[in-house]
Each structure stands twice: as C-alpha cells, then as structure tokens.
Image (cartoon, rainbow, N blue to C red; front, top):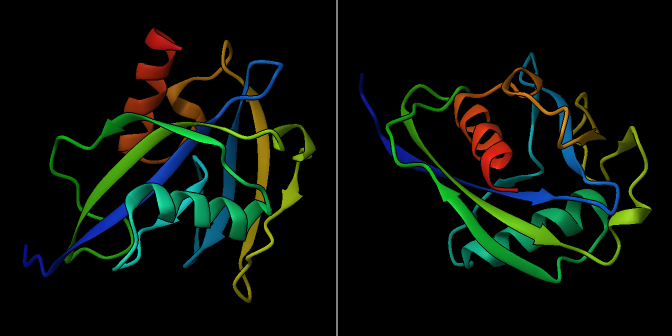
Length: 147
C-alpha cells in the first residue's frame, strides 16, 4: 500500500425533537452509500468551521453548537482513494433550523450526475447496518451507548 496523504472528514450528528438522527444518502463515484452529514475539511479552515460550512452548503442551515463526539483512532484507508488514509471527526451538533429539514430533501450542493438526499432515522431504531462505512458503523454503536 502506497499512502500519499491524509483525507480529513468532518461529520455532524444532528438529532431532532423526535429523537431522530439525520443521515445522508448519496450516489457518487459509482457507489451508493449512507453516512452522517458532512464532508471534506479544507486546508486553512478549522474543523468545526468546515462542519458548519458543509451544513450550510448541503442543507442551507446554521449549526449553533458542536460538541466533539469521536475522532478515528484506528487506521482506515479511504473508500474512494486507496492512496489516502482517512481521518474522520464527529461532532454532536444542534441547529434551531433542524425541523425545517424534510425527509428525502435534496442537497443544495449536488455535483452533476450525483444523487444526494437526507433522511431522518429514529435513534432507537438506528443500527450499524443503516450506514455504509466502518467508522460510521462504530459511531452508531457509540451513539446507542451514549445518546
């Protein structure tokens, strides 16, 4: 394996008044997957600033608070680039605009040819099988124990 760089991702665990967590359902690079909302950190921005930017770009909402939940503490290769080591940072976030997010709402920031919608899933019924990637699966298990 010839790793060339780190890929830092930041994700938000947004839970609404019905105790449902927001999930992102996407089709990109020929793959279908479900993950938590968020995305890539950009050089020159803070981690939380990147998370807030992602929520603005994709959902048009503002994040009021972000409490660190988990950072990847094991080796993980990116699912999209085998020469990148993935580091994911998760925050439990709140937004006074969470209730405005509709089931199957399309992302405001869709690349041409991509599909990207959002769905709410009851935290009580959430399981590791509801998300695609190994780090997200671990985060689901941690959520079930702590939230």
